[in-house]
Image (cartoon, rainbow, N blue to C red; front, side, top):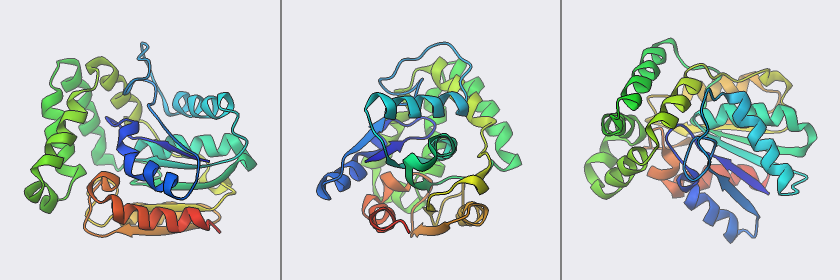
Length: 242
């Protein structure tokens, strides 16, 4: 069983290519919309990584899943990491795409501005910024269709829920990574300006059994920009985590 967790502004649809990859391998896989996103409920905030990770564990329990590999993207990495701590031996492996132990200090005003923009209904402005870091310059230039689809994904968010998700993301961190017992893959796009390869290396060094991977030429949303390259890195690990 593989459980996929999206990042800020995303939804389960961010993992469609990877879900297909799991089906081709005969694996059971689930991608879920986190609280406040996609088709999930959007209760009043505040939200937090702790709340999202409890939701993730509750989902596994509701599905009757005894053991799973967890895959997260961006703040979803922090959610999956917290859930892995709670799951203990039930977590078979942990793959972190575009993750960080903690956000860089310069990210704080960016998240604050996103909260303000969302609460004033300016999701189109947020979408423009997200695609700038989410897709490489080459892909934005050469693939206007993907650029448009990604913008629409962000604009489709509920403004107040997105604001709450942004506020929760701003203070998100990983917790006690040295206690993660399962194998861990930290990977990202080589052109990722949000969580560059150095952030993946920091994660791998912080856990007991870590390794890194790179999706060449891709930016922060590498699973959307280059699904084939992402699959090569991800499934090489999931097929033999140790």
